[in-house]
Image 1 (cartoon, rainbow, N blue to C red):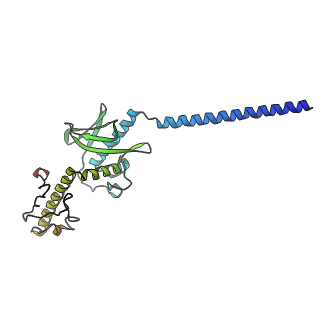
Image 2 (image 1 turned 45 degrees about the vertical axis):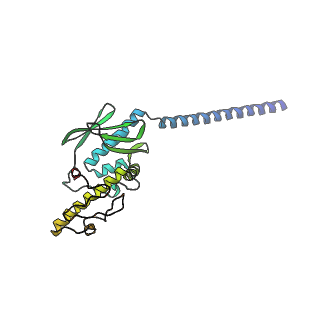
Length: 247
């Protein structure tokens, strides 16, 4: 009887050990499967990923040219509403838009505007995976877009663009361009003021707030601008007057 009981106990112990081994094996197999699935989800074909990134940029340029607000909203990551798309409304009927098409040409995307025979090339490099560039037919850089992957989808990264714009504005060249833009805005406002009042304003402050939102200043010197009495702005002491070709 005792021998029978001991045998039964040994069998139960053996069965328990077997069950533990089976359960452990299942747990390990499940864990390995989960790791495999995770790895497969994370592994992305770099060529396919690069194409998806550049296609996002192409669709962005097409939507922007057509003033497709909803299309732009779907393509942009902009939590701070830097681009103003969150509050933008579709353009009114008759608003000028451009018809742009794009197609693959080797590893790059070539864009064409219906009314413009010139071609523009979108490209990116593995060295700068978050940057997409647009160049003209001569290879001159026209625009730089920053992109970011959100929920496995490439989006235009408005935050990165904002930071780049801020950094560029602080450089000597950026400050010069800002100063020239200020002058151009003032002279455009002067023309509008003259059309409404049949006379020229005496100072820049006369243009605020109807024609200018605020009195602009040179970003380098912090000084305001002086009008010359003929509808133009006196040249900035640092940057001069913006070139006529910029008008």
